[in-house]
Length: 158
Length: 125
Image (cartoon, rainbow over all chains, first blue to last red; front, top):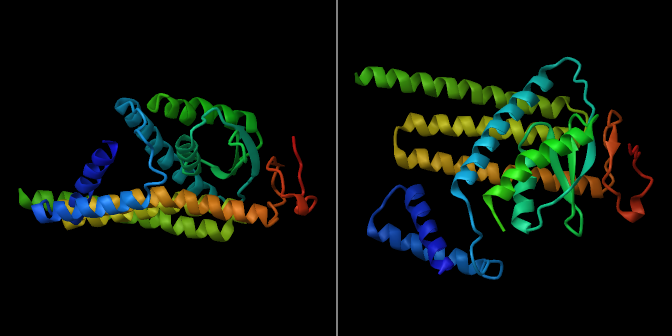
């Protein structure tokens, strides 16, 4: 059931990207979608995760805001004659447990101001984050856990 | 009226092109100026993503064609999905290989692989 739903979604994306909604193209998209889903059938979850659409939109909005801020911040930093860097790697204790949530958080962290995910511990409890300005790791940790981590938990309830 | 719309899109496209190019230049400058691989990946993954995203958006709007705009947006989406992964893998590989953080660094809480311990200055707080 979820397989069909995801396949239909892929078909629509295919039609949108290839720019034609003719029946032939939709069939081709469906076939290509089924083939790609077949390739990842081992990793495919039995049921889709529950998603709260509004919270997901909030997460996306927060992300784009932070992405713009981060690009501007890095740009300003690059232009400064004396860059005054205080870089370092700090450990961030994860409260998210599912793999896709950790992946999402790590990706979001990388694209936001001054932080870059470097590694996750074997037991998936700690995320190691490189920060351009690491003189106050506690503040960075608070910012991540009250920002992205909270929003991800709200968007994907267990 | 048509000319007004043409003018508006032309201005929007030009602004996006200039800002996108600016971010791309700054990303390249960041690669040159930052002191080590980890800080360089910040410039490459963030300013680079925004730069190419704005350029793609400009191309999509300029074409004035939904199919092309959607493809440009898809390109940006894939950039957002893949840029952090390459940055993460490069940083992780560098750290495992024992590549040092710059001397300016204040802390490194990521444990080193066993055989490399002591190779890197670790100043935990």
